[in-house]
Amino acid sequence: MKFSAPLKSDSIKVMLLGSGELGKEVIIEAQRLGIETIAVDSYNNAPAQLVASKSYTINMKNKDEILDVIRREKPDFILPEVEAINIDALFTAEEEGFHIIPNADAVNKTMNRKNIREFAAVDLNIPTSKYEFVSTYEALEKSANNIGFPCVIKPVMSSSGHGQSIAKSAEDLPNSWELAKEARGDASELIVEEFIKFDYEITLLTARNENQTVFCEPIGHIQQDGDYIFSWQPMNMSEIAKEKSKQIAKKITDGLGGRGIFGVELFVKGDEVYFSEVSPRPHDTGMVTMITQSQSEFALHIRAVLGLPLNFIDYGAGASAAYKAKNDTFNPLINIKDEVFTDTSYIRVFGKPQSHEGRRMAVALSFDKNSSEKALEQAKKLIQNFSD
Ligand SMILES: Nc1ncnc2c1ncn2[C@@H]1O[C@H](COP(=O)(O)OP(=O)(O)OP(=O)(O)O)[C@@H](O)[C@H]1O
Ligand SMILES: [Mg+2]
Image (cartoon, rainbow, N blue to C red; front, side, top):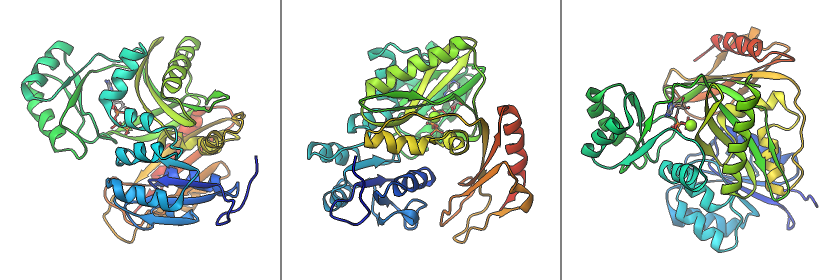
């Protein structure tokens, strides 16, 4: 294929809708290939905006505003990087001939728990936790009893654990109901899920285009309050569980179709694997691939988008620890002690222009040639030396 330069008549143009820390890495990979990058978000100086050829700040929920930047810039590829986005704009843009990554229907399915769960469990017959959808409190009580306690209750549209809770008994249901209803996003309907007492959970990064599907080594992770805090790669799994995971990932990504990388979230209990959800874009737990693979999840994403070969090699094991701010400020200062900068550590400060309590501001990555346990231990130590 032919490569140009940004801001030329023959530029290849990539537009990112959502410009966070994952988008920033996607843009850096695109820039390395001379691609023109346009970063769009709902606030100024978002991480990816500061490294892009151009940027726009718009209301991402507004159909006309999204369509306006798309029609004006005429990007070759549009990469939705966040779930909070006006989906009608993507369908319209696709009808007008724009190339949405992976495609508007996949973005629509994955942003709504009901769509993706029914697609996986009913259409594709993939194993999941038991689930029911409810829209009234009475229905919630009924479903929770059907499914049994503990059960997990989530708004159909939400991310990063917002509005999500575990009900241990019927007494917890009023609280779960309130929590879900107060969350941003669409809580008009809730999903009630069987609580899976998994041994561990993984993200199976899967990159695909018309020619190829590749899997990264499984990434283990730990979630706290609905957000990941530690991840490591490879996760040591039984061959059977690993094979099942790949089969599920292949089925769901083929089902969604299109080009790009997907983060397939799976729960593993013994040799049983349950599909949980999937991101049609790079995954936060996958930042570790920046140091473990010859092509990171971000590089693979760009290669997949361009229809290029997706082969890569593994360098070794690695782990990541997320740093979350403790303070609310418009002038964030992350204190990272000098001893964090070792021969096997890699630090990424996202450069977010504002911090608030719990906002992810940086990540510590740690490499170990052979052992993800050692890498994880190291990452946990590194993050102790961050503060704000
Ligand atoms: N049915 C379940 N059984 C056990 N644990 C669950 C279940 N559903 C969710 N969890 C736990 O909660 C975490 C977050 O759930 P989920 O991925 O559905 O929500 P999310 O808001 O989309 O999170 P994120 O945006 O961080 O991926 C999971 O990674 C898992 O640790
Ligand atoms: Mg998730």
